[in-house]
Length: 212
Image (cartoon, rainbow, N blue to C red):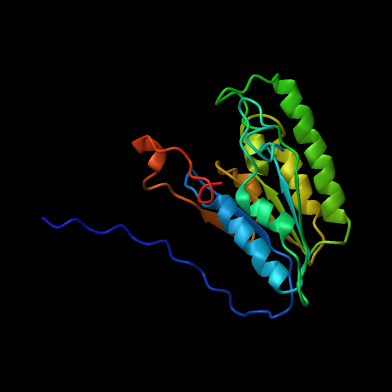
């Protein structure tokens, strides 16, 4: 007996399209790898179009090398090293970044009191408000801001408020693991990264220059 194939969800197409510029809210979410990678690729693309970009990383630690990181922290990803050292030539935008996290929360050896992580995340929210409303950046990336919500450092309302604060022509990218319907409803584009295989489950740790 043949099994019937599941019906694909029908996508409703708009009756008309507009070529007017619009700032998008973009969300990369899911258990699979690639969320931050996709956001960083967009940063490069935007800068190539002479747009200024600001990357604000929540949860991820400030330590730049294995010499100054603490338990539960991880070195800043290598793309940040690239952005910090690139010398723009010609009409391209600038890429700035800042880490407002203190590393993993309650895992991988983290011994910090949770209140310390919460204070760092709240300062990160304040910094995000400053960056979003400054008028200096066409693209703002709040990397792992949803992850900060997942581990109880901030509230869902905080992210919703940031989205609503965004100027009409500014693009905003948010990343994290879990799906929050109220947040996703405010997004123009949502891509879920689904894990099929992961080297960690073969006992292979993250590879520098590939994973971070």
